[in-house]
Length: 627
Image (cartoon, rainbow, N blue to C red; front, side, top):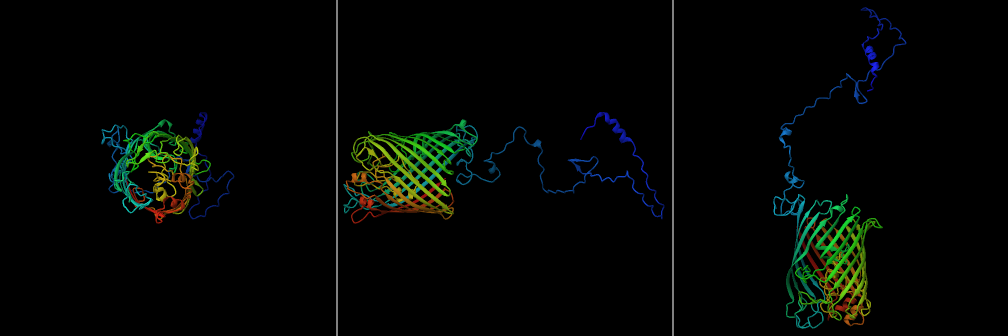
């Protein structure tokens, strides 16, 4: 409203008080007479519009009262009047936290034996310090996580089994290779416990303490003596058990390096899992070490700096043995990941790994009495070596094609080659690629791998590629016969295998767990196809077909004293079925079958009298229960 000057106020009041001027009105005619004709309008008469009593620019005209809306009757029978504010405490108001609130409302009732719903022992709720006053923790953001796993494996299989030299299970067996059937039952119980601090929905814990123990019981039955034990008097079956420490570390989170997008930097010390690349081609193990790792740029950049001191492993279970002195074998790792590098949706990784081995003066005998260091090849002398791996790995997709690739170049020096007893340079290469295409519930895969072989074992260069500790998920993984089974190199080395269990490479090592890397090996070439069919969310069928070759057989010829050995290993055909009744990983059943149809090179090495050694089979029945 505009304001008037104070000098005009008295005049305005006089105008409001003055009566209006009189206006002549027409006379009212007497009753019964017609009204007189209305006079013609004068020039000063003006028709004024009716006054709008409504809202003008958000204000109502003074003196106007708008009509009221219709009356609404509310009838809430049985309603309880809310208590007055004075009924509540003024100093504090107890409200359950977001974890216990749903239980207070009756939505969830915690059950120790129910892993599917909220459970304090699964880390879904913070620890109630009143129940554990002896635990030295402060704050309401500490969590306890318990994981229990039962892994049961039954595995009947056939593979070339050499006949014992001193004695045999059957006196009629006088060939190099005997009966090829054996069977394994392995039961592993894993118990993991973690105590961690921090709300981990979006960021890593502030500090974490973790311990994981694994107890394994295994039974093996083979048809020949001196396969399971070095003593020929020992039986051809074995029952063994072992308790290993697979994780025992402390993880500290540097909070001052956090960003708004929850990027972080942490350091972890102790026995811990580590995988150097996406598929586990080079180093995939649980070892004693220190690792600095983290992420930046909204998690688009990740890095690892690690140093590991390799532990001895139990011979028959493959678990870590902390009762033995660690090996004189060190692994130093530096790698970096970058998402959307060069190609959107493709993550690139560059890595440098240095393996320093100083076990030339160590003589290690495994739990079954077989020498594993040095391997019983060539001159049988101990070895020191330095190997540097330069690698590039990629994982992601290009358009609709899923792509995984790895390339490694191994350089270094073997201080004492077992063929020449002289130093030799290490120069070997490895490459693997797997492409897949998804169509509805089906995935079709193409796989290819190349590991260079040594072309001349007596020169000063070792060209056979070998890893530190491989555990590849590739070309069918442990469903594949060649990856799953260990083929003993009978006739060319004692207690030496062509390949390692759960390994891809033909490295001619005593064992993957306790042996040394060997760069005098025949290498590998693999080409394969496969497909996965998710028939339901609970049931999957997979099939794989791989064709295998030795890259170069010069090493095999030298160790076998043969003039020529063909390169073809054969066809590896496998299929598997996985059933998850609850559509999660808590209950998993797996059944797989694989066969190796031997090629000319494999037949040359392992054919027995009477034409045996043409086909080999492997069956794997596996049940995994997880809490």
